[in-house]
Length: 555
Image (cartoon, rainbow, N blue to C red; front, side):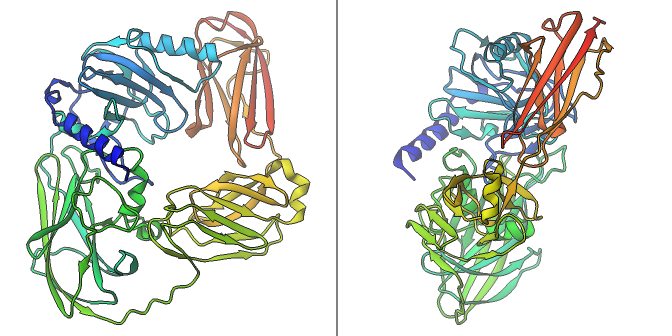
């Protein structure tokens, strides 16, 4: 990890602990009940804020936590959806995401800019004088937009200068929490002297009784992992815990605390957890030792966390999980480790984590930069011939995570050239379903940049998107308050859309979770005869154009 990043995170924590915490007020006027905590383990990232329940509904008033000004607005169909960023004199920026809409003043400004740029998706950076806000002032309404799958408010506090998210629960927000975290399971790993995993050698559930466990260890070092979660009052969600410490023979050996996590670090989650266990069993085991490529600053110790093993080593182990409210859970066990002969029959090509790695055949090429992997890995490569457009290429499997993009070059069958401009590559997920990857032609090959291993295949998309007007009939009188359009693409997916009324752009909002475009009728639609035209294009350039003429009658 670069020294600059370490200093930025350190300054973020220092600022977080400063004198401004007591000046913030809650972003909602309801009791704060959490469905997600800071640093929680998500899919390939740590959660950058807290998720506040909104009583199962949208439209709650969202308030600014302090005086300041709107410094950034982003409207997206993915990620944070509709999001608002407010900069404060304290040196913090508060973030409010998955919003349904903004306050009237902010909404008017955003809509004006959307029409000026003729785009629903937009990112704006107003100056400090355009949209000032007061503490407790209305700034938005809670929603379920973007990558949200239930109504809630995603809330963050960042260091304005470094943009490093810090734990919002350090700022005096009252979240009722009388429940300690739960340590659900111990995991043990045989490790070599580089921290390389030789094998997972055991999983044990904690017991109230004194536990004595004997393990045969085919390695010189032992690694410990744990599954831990936390609950706050008022909800049954299994949220992430704040801190976890491992004690070995009475001495703190390894631990972490979720105080601040840089976005440049967040993908190292895949090194922090037992990724193969997550892949096979959907269980996120937290490693209490470091894989070779793990520079996370949440780790509060200098060492690697490896526990050296001598002949018949006896260890007294203790795990202590803590939450932000001061609740703690402790569990102990006595471990007797018996050395065993290592029998590692590694198959495949050795890729070293700290070196550039290439693998080239006449049909498959892999070019991987240094530090794309978290540890040395033996990767296997093969292909299965098919009756389709090309072989299935097996680039190892989904059990190994990749941190950086690498270049993958695959050769299809010659028949694919007949569909050259409509061809693309997919990866197959755990259920065997297609995941669009894209790809570009390089002579007889197609190439792409990806951060996934697994199985790859070729597809052709010559089918345009489907588009329909569910409630608007040709030539009808229409007096509703909303116009809806359904659109979908089963192959490569929607790339872009545009809707016009009488030849002019009109702002339709896109909700991809429902395959829905919708327009809340306003002054931009005039009474009388109108012609609405929608044009939708998928990622391979297939386009559908559909029109409706109707007579709009103001209700």
